[in-house]
Length: 476
Image (cartoon, rainbow, N blue to C red; front, side):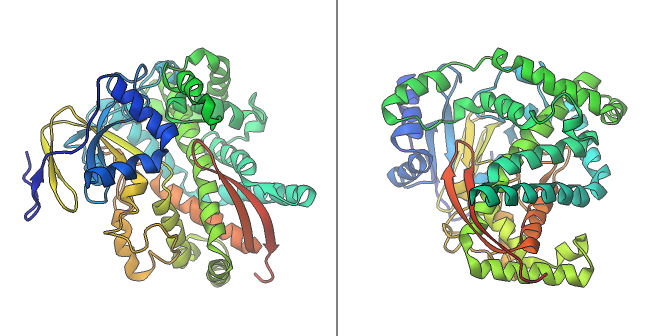
């Protein structure tokens, strides 16, 4: 047990789970249909006058045995979820439920493991070693894939006057990920061009209990019954998953050889590879890059001009898009972090208390009992008005200069931006790679174009982004 910080009163955790079964159903309907995510949380913050409270989280009955959580929604309480000495991360990737392990070949892949489990150390150490060995490939390979993406976007704009960024991004992202891990273009395998669609279906069925597809409100009970009440069966994607697994297995012999040197069975290593490449990497890029483009696009021509000037100057001085050039682009880096702050790609974090603990918010301390589930809604924590000025606004230069001191409150990677992933924590092993690729996307965009405009719509996970104009660069 840890005492509350000095000057902060210890208070009981407010909130209610309601009646058994029916309370969870009510909260689920509020979350998906009656209020929506943000209002679901903000209304309870206002009601309880606390950023820490008890509630139920979807999907609830009959998918999740126990939907009860303690929500932590401010920048001070949220980081308890990173402390694996106090918080257990056993099977909590998707929250209060675990999809059928048939989706992952019968294995609990690394993302489902707690760091205390020996297999977590070997698997995460292995993937971190693989990423380190690919370091020199990141920039040239990603730039090659981006070049084809921009060609596809320009062709679509020439014929339709607008371009769907998401479709081109999906193809680019899967191509990059497959080539990075397998050193082969997916078109040379039995996947052909089907990779993105197969992964979308496989991931979508696992995450369906956490989403809504936006049917008319009079159909909400039908959708709720269909998506949130019973587990989605694996057989709907069984043949697709086998095709995906076989393509990775046949194309990644050097990867699997290395896995064996870490004591990992080839079959288990390949199922983990499919998960890391498909769910984590491609799935993350699919959701995150349109979000980044949305916020940069909406920021307007003034920021675009500043970015173009910084990027082109640094590239000219360094003779190309090099790591040294990227390090000179302070505004570009800040813009990426600001997008990660205002709309993090993975909004939810979960963990179960290993022991009785006390957590602190800005105004109070709260006791959490061993075995209670803690839930963090990251967009509220990273838009904490007691930490960030104008937290709801996209401020491109927020993290320039002394603003870098605020990076410790950017939590997108299941850890602080100022900390690094290790085999002993749950921080994303590709954390630095995500930031690098995001910066490269912005760099390549403004090497080619002076400005652009977008129209956006909300998707179950992320945003749909349509490019409505692209003004080619007048100088480079």
